Amino acid sequence: CLANNIIVCCLPSYTPHKLQPCDVGPFAPLKTAYRDQVERLNRGGVDMVSKEHFTYLYSPAQDRDMNKRNVQAG
Image (cartoon, rainbow, N blue to C red; front, side, top):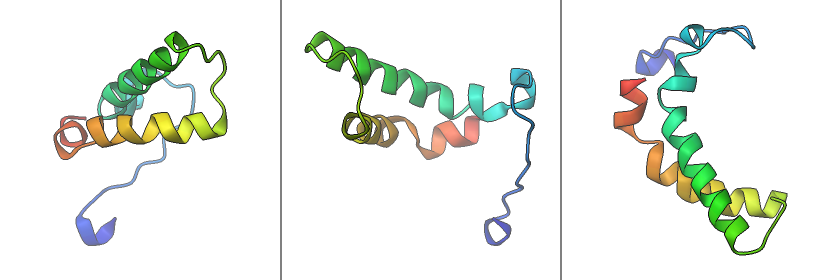
């Protein structure tokens, strides 16, 4: 982090969203993309997301929405 001028802040859990900027910044689009992947899987007849499903679903969502623009906007 120091080499890239990134400031790390430890935020308490269960605090208002104003104290957790990543929840509304870079992770909001990622959460939506992952949810879309899970819903698609559910429409295909799978009711429960296993560990194997998680990796299969999360990777495309992360590739699509965890990008420089979203991180900088957060």
